[in-house]
Image (cartoon, rainbow over all chains, first blue to last red; front, top):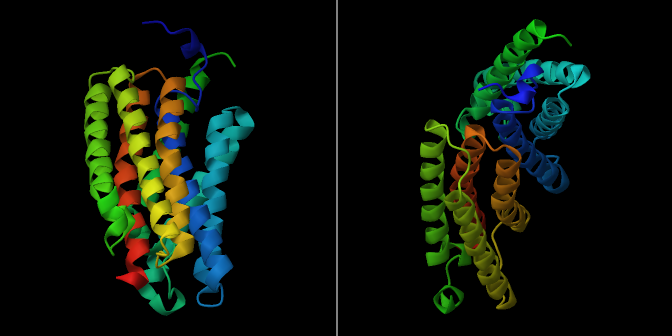
Length: 142
Length: 132
């Protein structure tokens, strides 16, 4: 079962590729939503729409970081997943505590309830995956 | 197709949409079985994605006919955004599945085929907002 590429575990193969695919889907969803909201009705809920845009950027950069798979990519992905987790928890809590600040939904509202709570699960999976591949990397000569 | 064009409801509501949703869920189920059995994406998954893409392109055609007939979606921006995203999903799944010839390729097909029905439903909702 010795695969040639298992010598150097990477973030962009195996389960990582599935993760990148889901990140891509959310990058598309969040960026098109943010673009539309900002273009058509920015004045209604500027905070919510800017957060949508931020979420979109984070998803795109995280996907690129995971796909690049080098040390820099890994660091970028780590920063993005952390920011994402903080974002979804923070915005989720705020959207419940102060609904007046969020007259319209963002990807992260209600802990991502509008998207099947996947925005909440995704950064956790991302961090777990980075941790998993780092442990493998530490064992292999780099 | 003619039935969808003549009804006053959403062009994204017809038998084509139902067929796309059902097929997408079937492919998702089959891909999930493959992933659980440690199988890479097989020919059946790729054929399923191809047929799904044809159904979605049919949906675009029906929509184009409705637009030519003077009908308009309730939220044009969202509607066309979803429509463009929708036709990109099966090719995306196929490309990623080819790049990852392991069980995780099947998992990718499963994930994308679970998202596709959601986008079809959103497509229907964004058409109906104003027109009803």
